[in-house]
Amino acid sequence: MGSLLVENVILDDQKTSIYCNNGKIVSIGEDCNADEIFDGCGYIVHPALNNSHTHAAMTLFRGNGDDMPLMEWLQTRVWPYEQNISSEEVYWGTKLAITEMIRSGIVFFNDMYWDFHAVAKAVEETGIKACLSAVFIDFDDPVQAKSQQKTNERLHIEAKDYSDRITFGVGPHAIYTVSEDSLRWAGEFTREHNLKLHIHLSETEYEVKECVKTHSCSPVEYLKRTGMLSDRLAAAHTVWLSERDIGLLGDYGVLTINNPVSNMKLAVGEVYPYRKLKDAGAVTAIGTDGAGSNNNLDLFEEMKIAALLQKFKENDPTALPAGEAIEMATINPSNFFGLNNGQIKPGSAADFILIDVQRPEMQPMHNLTSHLVYSANGYAVDSVICDGRLLMKHRKIENEEEIMEGAYRAAKNLFARVDKAK
Ligand SMILES: [Zn+2]
Image 1 (cartoon, helix red, strand yellow):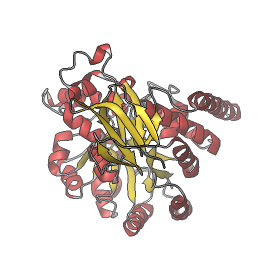
Image 2 (cartoon, helix red, strand yellow):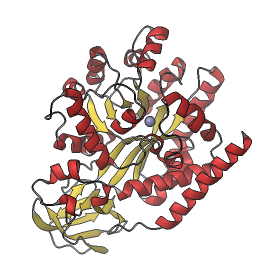
Image 3 (tube, protein in one colour):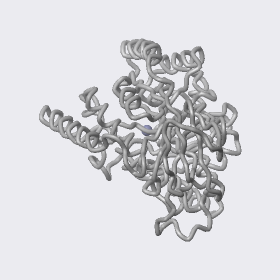
């Protein structure tokens, strides 16, 4: 990996340069000889964003099944196609998602999807970072449970062949799609190997009611019972929570991921209890969820909507201030996933973005934090550096046309094939 000098950028209101080597920021404001010199053209430097929950390849499902109830959408517009999706289609869908994420300043995503190797290949080729978990669903079937456990044990070993930008995680989909035996296995296996866990948790009232009916406790309590609660657990949604649930998520230091757009689009009927989770000690983060339920992967939009929804719900305009929304998309997930990228300083990972403030919606420049959350969207990102490499140079990404063409063909083939077989 060569060294990179990003010159002529603004950091803390000063014009400076950033020297990166071996994936790290080595020095700021010093003259250094680098293999590559990039003119930052006076753009503002900001830590890159981390997307804590998505299903990248679901870009293929974008706009196909909006305005529908969650279960009907999954059963008619998602699962029949996912059962037939090929590795190649997952690969192209993931590449499209990564291109979109890079365009809006994201350098890391926490993913849960089918076909681990197809997703990993897309991550490797594009230069982004990711924690990848293969979807783990066994529908309470002991045969499927065993086979899924074996698959994850195998993937854990195979994942070591990829670069350090890829981390393997275990992704039991949700408490209602995974057996108790497999949840216990996932808790145990990830503890033994110090791996992250990724699950959908307390997303709907139905999920909570069914859990109380079947297990006589809430989904969070059920995860405690099965040994899944830990500071390695990333839990998406976490909206239908009791005070006791919030206390448990805090006690264990669980990463709780707010997905406001997906929650509102699918009308889950509750709002992520941001302040309570933070005060209890849970880690707070923001994710886009998949493009099937968002429908874009723009974390700038997600920060704004997260902040607005908290204010509306709490009837309090001071709820979730802009600076904290940014922390939920930068430093908080960075600490949880061990990314070392939420700050611009020597020794940090060389993961940062250049923001163009010479845009009408970014002027006048009273307050950058405010503008980033309430005014900007992904289009304000001019360039993206990940692991000391330029992934987007002045809005240009390598092979972008080929990726869009590949994803278009993949979506067309998948839907034509499955619809024909119906
Ligand atoms: Zn999800």
